[in-house]
Image (tube, rainbow, N blue to C red; front, side):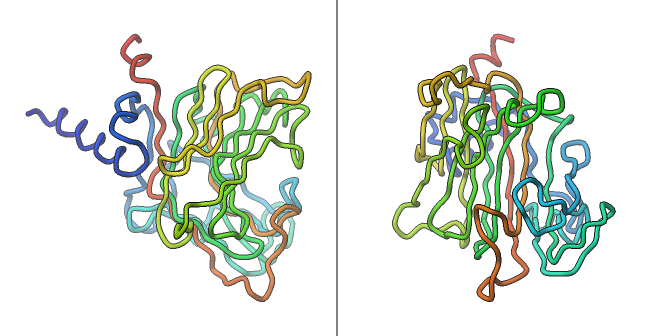
Length: 278
């Protein structure tokens, strides 16, 4: 058996173990990934990830300043670790903030229309702590938000047993986004172990998953009357941990710091049949 076949079988076992059944895994071909296996203390791979930095609130009245420091984001122990800290910090933008964290993105490095996108993560939990795994349309620089579209694969706002998956577009954005609240199965929580958070998309269909469980399925029929379905073009990926905001609220005396989000991997797939035909 060749090394290539062994590698493919190993990848299939990993996929089926961590989020998809083996039958589902056979539908997909891996086209992009980051396994975060670099030397401890290494920043995210610059060929795959860039940074959003600054403390201007990010349109959500957030309290953190995002940095590109290893203190806030690094690879360690086979994971990407994003760390939110309680510290006084003033970035190059001049905003003085009481917290720091990190937000990384694949903008201008990788984007894809359709397929399956997943991350295996252990989340931080606390009042005012807002970890997220999400996507923005890669035309955001020309058309702006929300016309570019936003796909929130996973957001958590301090509840260990609950996550949210949301679509934002023109006419259904912000508080009016099309959102699904998902309560984890009994005994499951997001902060004591790893889970797979995923989205699968095809023309006119988007499905959100927690491990192998379907959270919600969205089609143009779910949009408000006259609203446009804006998920027919490439999207780039974002990982971040925000501190505070109008939706999650703000840290209080119960919120412990540091808060860390661990990301075992991020993987992107295309349908296997599509890959074979190319």
